[in-house]
Length: 392
Image (cartoon, rainbow, N blue to C red; front, side):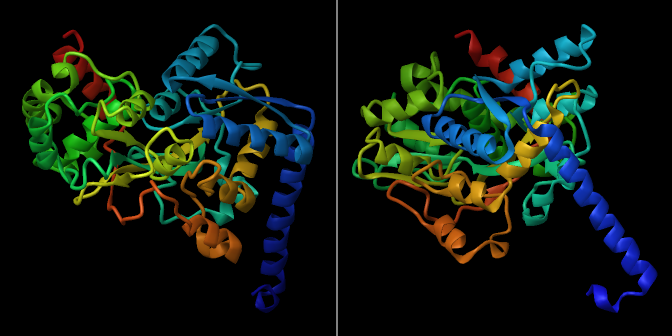
């Protein structure tokens, strides 16, 4: 309580607050008229519509022109930034803000390719739930170089009318696949959802989960993944097309589930099943579920490349994405249904109620969240998976 502080301390605190406010006002003023090229996944209609809404709001509120550059793989954006900087383009880059996490963030951070730190200086950082993993990204410290904007957790979807008792673990999934040959599959890594599914199996099957939180080494990789490869060798012959081909994406799996070709699909958004039911892409009896022991989950972020042209505009837009209004709108299952990174206790009652709202098809059960392995495991897993199964 400031009125009980000594005068010198009070002046110091007020000075810091006033200085921060002045700095942010300067950032907002600099952002006016800037064009922010936001590189973000463009494979989901609901996500694209949300980004379009946020861009419209940013234009009206802050006079920022946000352009959604629709991408399929954040790794390609990382390569573009690397190429630009290596060629001497240290300013005026083509990417101002990007949706990123995991190994892509690690590669950018390790390469000195990120602007910052800036995230914890955003005015709306005070609303963030610090009990969520917002300060680490796949066990890599974020250190203010990226700002959180949503949560995600691996979730399975089925038609409960046809599959009233779905598998609830890796062991049950193997038995289910053998009992339903050709009706189970997963996207081919390095597709994000396919790699996530493989990581889920690894977390369940490895004898020592703790090593997955450390940077990968040849020795730990060999010992930790041996049960995974043995499991996949058993699973693949019972998969769709005998495991010799895989769906290209989760979206294709949703279509195959809707057509009855597959019995299960998967998503990294616990509310996507509701969106698919509402859009009539899945039957009304579609339901979402998780594994009893938990499923892998994380926070997704936005980051600013070191050579971004519109750094001020990118920060102002990122701050808006963290606002109570933007987070509540994003969490609305009729809009996107993406989980919030905010502390809901700090939000208005109507926002809290909307975030608790569920719809048919969404995940309604409580599923424990398993932590992501260290980012270095991703590339190692994808390379070994492709070596073993990619050429079949």
